Image (cartoon, rainbow, N blue to C red; front, side, top):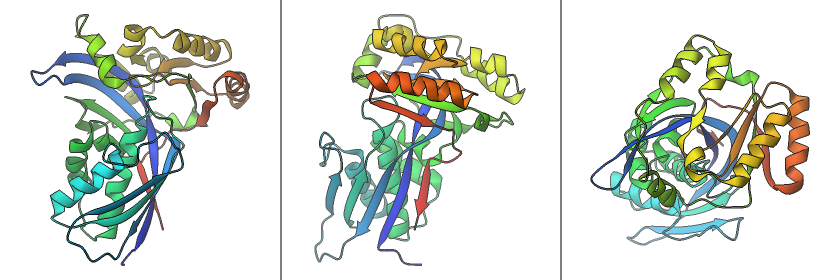
Length: 299
């Protein structure tokens, strides 16, 4: 079936674990982390244009003024890399309805890039597999391949070596509260700071995955971890974590290079109470659930 317009719901991620394990000669850092998709999402609409020209044409718009709509945007890069990979000239109009905060540790930019790849694959009938889309995505950014797949995955190397975490642990019984303080964190700067101390040798993902496979909630909660939390020591992050824990969160951890904090709840009343408290000070506060996919195509 031919499509001229495709809309994709592109979901955010949180880090259940994140250990920085080393640094490569090219300057990239290696990591060991378990990533999980959550239901906070951006809406990406890609329209195929009928323009008689030999070059790519990319018209990009976003509902948030602070988001660049040029070559700096992952959505723009996605078109260029898709075009190069497939040998297709792409002439498209992309509209991003952004809900995921930027510079937040939630892969907001990465999931937009992944969403555009998924949309282009359908628009141009290229029938690429998720593995092929992830291969293109790795050129855009380290989190893009995960955002293609979604669900629960172990990421190693620079974050692009992915393995699905098989488990029968019921993540859907939890509610995930996200709260981003009114600051941004530069991921390159955060990684640069990690060079000042020894890299992790004992990663937290092994114990976390074992806990999920054995249905051990206590061990699962105890092994949620983020290296950047102690590395950056952001006072706003610690404040949010404290508020969450004081108001019923089973655990509270920073996601990615921050500064977004997530709290895990099994009680909707406690979650709503914490939401109300945090929302008074932090506008970017969201109630979410875990999801099994990273990109959802809606026709």
